[in-house]
Image 1 (cartoon, rainbow, N blue to C red):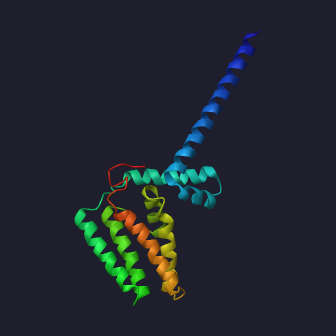
Image 2: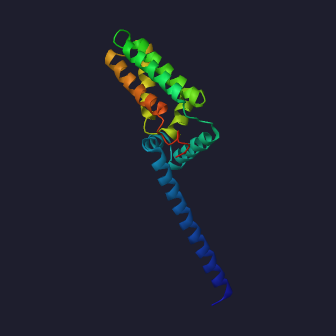
Image 3: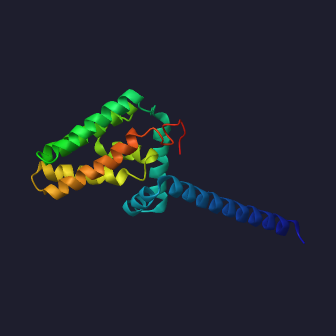
Length: 186
């Protein structure tokens, strides 16, 4: 065969190998992100125009999170916040809207002490989703109920559900047994 045919075969082989490697890396990235973010991966995928855009967003969240100094709470802080949470819950019967607002504020205090930036809600949710993807929907749901309650549109049952949502995130942020608290990043 002529030399140019061998060169053409080599070029085609390199292109095929490059495509196979690119597809394998892309699949690995998708699997890694899906495993790390769980249901948050699917939510982000639904909101994005393309899978590539969703995965870029999740990767950017992970990179931003790696730059943050998130730290565990001390035992004393955990006990103090647990006591405050009990007070918030006990007020619910008499003052559900007040209790819901206090639950939101208590979650913010815990986030702040742990080292999460207190930018706008969406940025807080994105930052928290890296370490706690399984409960970030609770945070969004709690915020939605808090907004409804502020405008007088939430029922007592809605506010009770909002408090339950906040409690799920609160317990996750407070807990000393999460991977982040042991110094590991997912």
